[in-house]
Amino acid sequence: MVGPDEKKIGGLAAKRRRRTWVLVSSLLVMVLIAAGSVALIVKPWTEEFRHGGLTIAAQPTPVTATPQVTPAPTDGPAPSKSGLAAALAPVVGNPDLGIFAGMVSDGDTGEVLFSTDPDKPMIPASNAKILLTAAALLALPPDKRVTTKVVAGSAPNELVLVGGGDPTLTAQPDGKGYYPNGPKLSDLVSRIKASGRKVDTIVVDTSLYTGPSMAQGWDPVDIAGGSIAPIDPVMIDGGRLEPLKDYSPRTDKPALAAGQRLATELGLDPARVRLGTAPAGAVEVASVQSAPLRDRLHDMMVHSDDVLAETIGREIAAATGNEQSFAGAATGINTTLRAAGFDTTGVTLLDGGSGLSVDDRMPPSVLDRVITVAALPNDTGNQGNSTPNGAPAPLAALLDYLPVAGATGTLTDRYVDGDRAAAGWVRAKTGTLDVASSLVGYVLDRDGRVLTFALMSNDRLPGLSRPALDAIATTLRNCGCS
Image (cartoon, rainbow, N blue to C red; front, side, top):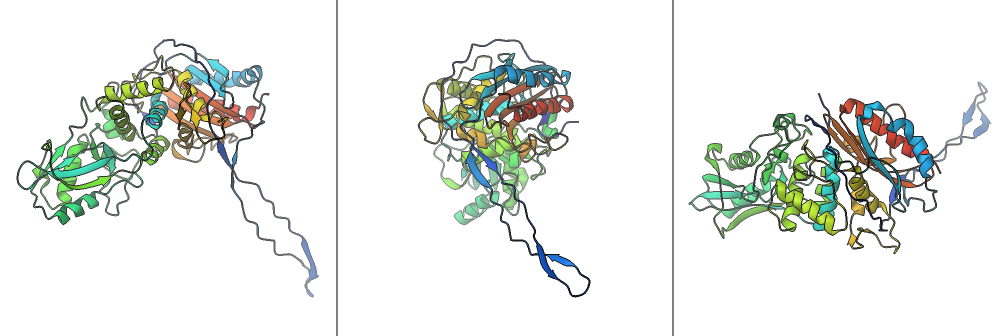
């Protein structure tokens, strides 16, 4: 049985090579949250009780904790390559890693400090979302919203629910569904009723998306397992049957289920719902909008949400002139990254960026390079960073979407047992399939140096490989190694 961020699929990594990276400076202001330690010093009170001879401690002065957001040090010494290699040798040699490939870079200079098989295409699992998020930040405005609308149908008393690519619509009675700030079905219902239109039939239009709704390398058992739903352009709470549960079983017909729920809320028989298309130039009756892209990217990364990833991948497809399909999303992601100067040699995406496909491949060098570019300082003093070709890019935001070790998202229950030295210091995206685990992110080492990393394990069950990957990240935190 697998836990959060784990998918029941198998397969081994292919063997390919890629070209060497060209490292170019880029921009970032990196911040780390550090809460200062406080100590209470209690001085004895000299006055004694007349009876008993007891001395009472004075009332302590109130102390207020002052958490601060401060930049990472600019003068922390970089680890030496030999020192880092010596520190990592015991943990990267752990047989629990199975087939292992990885890269560690200096977040201040971009220099590669350690690598082993860095160009080997590996099963990335959910770390494909690193490339998806980078492409979204490059191709789409951060405040972009997705619209779900209802229009007049071609027959009297017929309305059409038109999928716009948003799976975050909720039907929860209090409007608080799985996705924070998701649009409310109740708002659509209220606006339809306010229009005064009579309705006895609901048509659901899914024509925005083309091609299959399940990708190559996905296992249909993951629908009931709660990892995925068929990718339709309109869903309620990502197709979850239990709307507030991460790994709830999903419906296998999410768009039709959304139309049926709309019908029910309007007092109609769900049997009066069918799939179809909206007539050209149809009059809009009601609409609702998703949260901004920046919020959806955060939710997708922290919780490793595959459905949300796939729909954002189709937004990238549309923005790059591709059809909104698995193939179009993959093409859009690769095209966007290459245009920004990233070498995507060795990257194979068979889904739209979720990483759920067992047939996806990418080298650690590609993943580490994206994180490094996001982390590199900005010599001009402006917020942000530059892509390898020198064009301005908002990739620094990607760092804020990464879970915190021992605290948030898919890292909540990791780094909490045994050696907790890396808890709160590592920020990384997890990736877990039955025989593939990966960890990609950054850490501030003991000398105050930012190190980026991409660590990938194939051919081992996650119960073995994930602790072994965490041990590598913890060694980076403890290292210094200068």
